[in-house]
Length: 271
Image (cartoon, rainbow, N blue to C red; front, side, top):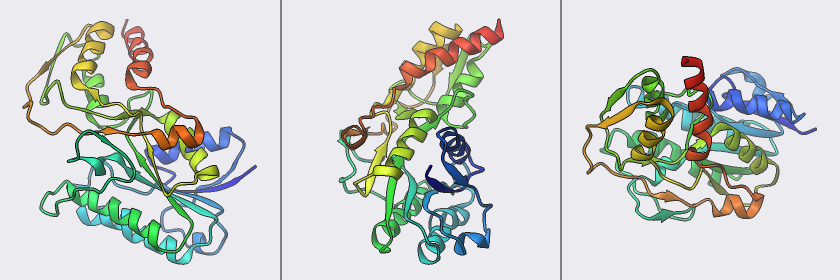
């Protein structure tokens, strides 16, 4: 049995991670945010899941607090064997082609969205240069069977249930790298226990387009997507997951392999 501490255990990723680790027989401590006990006991293997995912545009200072300031306190004061910092493949936005963990990033301080990116990037830099044992996991857009997130994929599917046609303010060629939570939690456990690199992409390695989502929704739910967005919007690059495959033999299932069963369950519940 291995001992873990999950910081941010009440969030989306943290909740699923705690369950996964518990199901594997590990001991998991889930302190509340701001609990001073994290600086008084040994934390063993730490997952830093504290973060802002949906409100970062309205709360930029809170975003920096979550991704940087609170992390700094842990790196300075806490005792642990290794820390896994959860970052995002959104840091690759603006790059083209296939991207890997060694690519330089493009960030623009004048773009409001990049407050999130800068804060995640600074959190990564702190992990690399604080002189503490730490590794970064850059996550794709994570979804679960309940489609509980507020991103385009989950929100669109929830709206499509029971509808014949649905308009969306996006273009068919736009997309994201979506990864199921089960693949994420398994990969994070493997990284904490045996990661050799300083950064790992935890993603499906495939850009799942809105057009592909539309095809699935029409086939499984009988709902046609009507795209009203501009085709000139940036399409994210393809994220390489070669490190994840090489070190752990893992290739997460792409959305077109995960979503049909979820959509069938939605259709069955509706019928």
